[in-house]
Length: 131
Image (cartoon, rainbow, N blue to C red; front, side, top):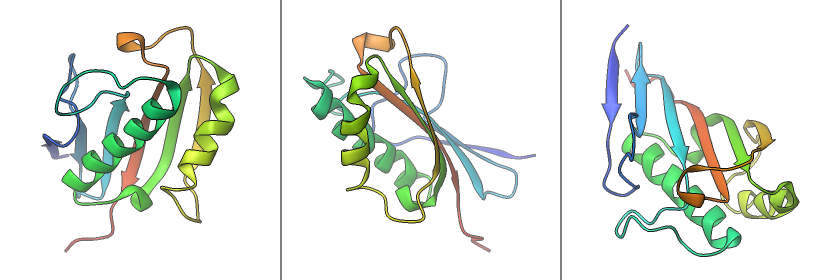
């Protein structure tokens, strides 16, 4: 199995022991690390849950692009929320970034997230055969 580390300045740099994304094996599967509402330029958290949800999708989009794909290549999306009352807002924002067929998805309520984030998302992306 071969591994390629994906790194882009268009999404926040890793703030721990992880990579933004890893492409494995034949290069078709990419695992995107969890993204929170950090602005990639300032490395500061954006304010408010709506802004954080928007920023998370922008960060995932940037890492997907750096991996040679797009949000439409995501086949599995995991969403972590500190308040499940914000789930409807996630669905609303998600509709502006994804089209059918939507990825498989899980939403989990959690007690806390890094840096006081209100939402975090990670994903698995499968790229079209690039040979």
